[in-house]
Length: 116
Image (cartoon, rainbow, N blue to C red; front, side):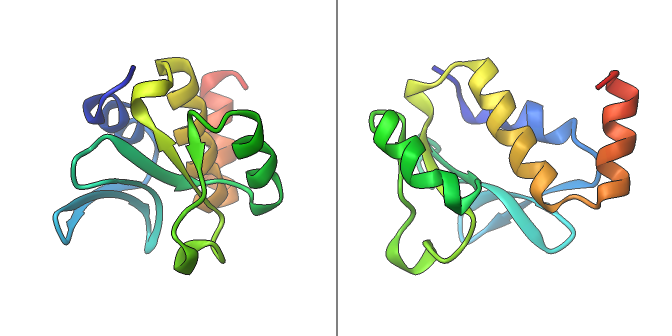
């Protein structure tokens, strides 16, 4: 199980990330693009995720993942139950969501510094 503080710790370590409070919800952005958002109760996280892989992920692990609301299904987005994932899974989800919206030069520099 992970918490909102774990999300914050991971996201705050990613370049150009800004944390904002929007309508009582914590969101993490790169520029104007939100890549992670917490539910008001901080038990669920929405994050950037490839649309073409979303259904397979939800079908494979429905206890962890869910579709976003109907209005948000047009976006590259998935919902995650924070009670059902560990910190390694969280790190991968948050970092991959960040990679989807961060400038490619920033991602390359991040990878270079991390040895990836």
